[in-house]
Structures are given as structure tokens and as C-alpha cells.
Length: 142
Image 1 (cartoon, rainbow, N blue to C red):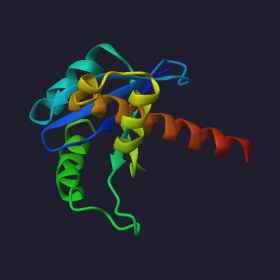
Image 2: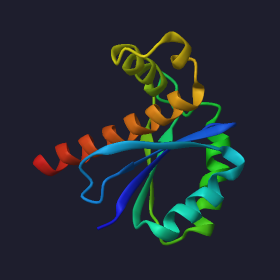
Image 3: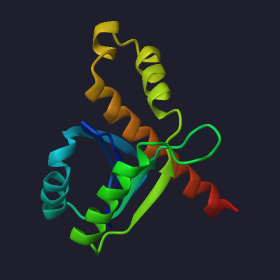
Image 4: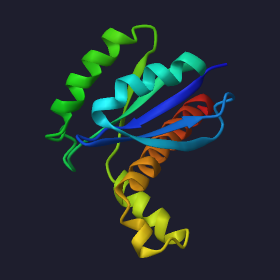
């Protein structure tokens, strides 16, 4: 059984989260510099079975794609070209950074630690992945 890997894509860095092989639990993996993301993915997939990539899709409040979607679209094209056997699904990522900050506060993290943007990106990727897993579970129950 393969894992599901989630990406919170940013212009400077990307948060990465991954499920366990049974696809029950999402865990933050790490944050990777955007220009190194493709190399990271290829390396990770060389020793881990990944059956799906879930990417956060930034949306405006009115449901329209945000400005940053143009950067993600370029990366998606490259991703599908270089890893054609791994399907990619997009997931609405509105409010994930806000939820990540709130999770850090609720977890008792110090203010100085909450300023670590890399940590926020990894937590946001975990939230994206958890949302995806929950939506699939709900669909299976219907």
C-alpha cells in the first residue's frame, strides 16, 4: 500500500506531509525549499511508495483561484511530466495557514516558535492532507 503525500506549495518553501502506509494518519514530514522540491520528491519516492500527491489549491474567499495559482500551475505541469505515474489531486487550502497558527497556539507553542514559517508550512500541509483524508472517508460513508 502506498502513502499519500501532501504539498503546501509556496514560492520560497513548501510544507510536506505524508500518511502512514494504511492512509489513516497524516504527519508533517518537513519543509523544502521550492527550488529543491522536485529533487526531494524524486528522492523520497525512490525509497517510499507514494500512490497519490495532494496539493493545496489556493483560493480566494469568492472561490476563484488566487494569484499564486499561476506558480502552482507551472509546477504541476513539471510534476506530471517528471512523475507521470503518480496522480495529483488539488484540495482547497483556504485558511490552512490560519488553522496551522491556531494549532500551534492550542498546542502551547511559544510565540518565538510560532514565527518559524517552515513549521507553519509543514503543519499546513498536514491540515491539507487531513482534510483530504476526511473528505474521502465521508464520501465512502455515503
